[in-house]
Length: 110
Length: 110
Image 1 (spheres, chains in turn brown, yellow):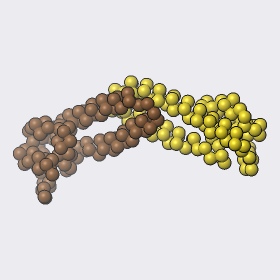
Image 2: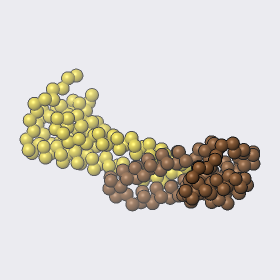
Image 3: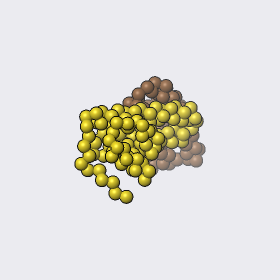
Image 4: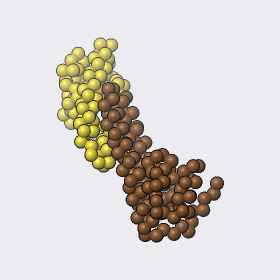
């Protein structure tokens, strides 16, 4: 499936919606991550549990660092991933053009 | 300062004392580390605090992984470091030859 991403124009309003949606998803994911870490820490009994927490944080940090790029060229892919992972609802993106929403929806179903 | 480390003979009893001392220091350090991590987790409010915990764990893991090598060729250096850091007392090494204890003591003061 080929999704044509070039030459999408972004109005100022859309840019603002996009950034706000990204922030919403980020806050949701980080809240969930902090809850998960607190839970994991309660379960720590042995050193192996601590290193498992460290591995978990390494993976999540790498993941999160790569996922919240607000570059408009690639942001539809980012949104699609966040929708797929449940951190973003399509309704959080209300106000983007139908064309963009259709692309995000198509990518999220891939 | 040059410390001659070669050709030190280890009796079976000394080997057993060395391994037991290493285990004692390791358990002390890990207990302290777990207490510190639980404390740091209580203080976590923002994502930056979580990544700081991650950095802390990365550094401590690297440090601990390199420090508890039970290879007899290098164990006097390991003991010296653990004494210097406070994880091991010289009395935990009672039973090693005077020569070995003197070397550990000298290295720990370097």
